[in-house]
Image (cartoon, rainbow, N blue to C red; front, side, top):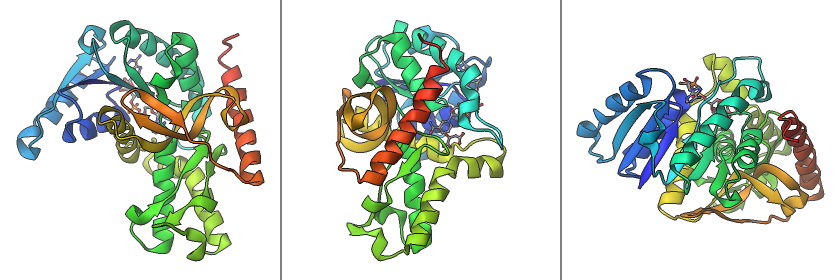
Length: 309
Ligand SMILES: NC(=O)C1=CN([C@@H]2O[C@H](COP(=O)(O)OP(=O)(O)OC[C@H]3O[C@@H](n4cnc5c(N)ncnc54)[C@H](O)[C@@H]3O)[C@@H](O)[C@H]2O)C=CC1
Ligand SMILES: O=C([O-])CC(=O)C(=O)O
């Protein structure tokens, strides 16, 4: 098994670190355009092998795609992160060019790879990667809902003063401050609806905090988050390489599912060795359906800015 992570910045390096620690592949290639950075970070990570006891080898590459050849899974994190006060959507101008050229290069050397897109605005970057490359839709996965759901569970756990490990819940829709849909109605504390433990007001606050979870961290840190994004991305990669069939909300190409066509956005999918294997169709309430439609409209407007014709 060989995995490539493009972008050796905060999210890319953290993703690679999580992947090597869990020995998800024999080799993990970290590629960046900044001279020497990926080689340096890969060597730094490899020096933890003697301390932590893993056997996966990280390899750095300064923009040399030959080194990524034959990758089974490729994660794309290259691109600008937002600064406080910005939306993810404002990154489209620069990141579209980066994601397009990276996708072309990756598929030239690894035509059979499953590609996980992280760069923002993620739903639109996933759509761009699909339209530009023609990659079979099931091999293209946008990472957003995995992270948003982890934040949702964390905010619920904090409010309830329980372990996040006992909380189950999902966030679907777009990966944007106003497009996310935390499915509060379906969230549980080990199978028991969270509405048994928290008031409607508290649940509304949890949902609102979840939606701006990324913006909150960006304001605190000065750039966007990386620990949970890296862990969420590695969780998806693990479900692929270990064929775990986990149900994870991911941005995938919809062709009529959830009432939407020709768009990538977050819905629950089963993730296994061939990519996303199937979409789980949830019975949404009327309010949830309306939120999904509104979310799709916003994502579609963003996609139109790509001018794909
Ligand atoms: N989908 C999600 O849930 C999340 C998405 N993100 C997004 O991930 C992206 C990366 O974020 P960070 O790692 O914090 O940024 P960063 O600035 O730390 O790292 C980005 C890296 O990409 C590299 N890069 C730029 N152009 C490249 C190219 N053509 N080829 C290869 N590498 C290139 C840069 O040199 C830099 O090292 C941002 O767009 C951010 O908004 C971040 C967190 C969560
Ligand atoms: O907030 C951002 O810009 C980065 C991101 O997507 C997240 O952390 O959810």
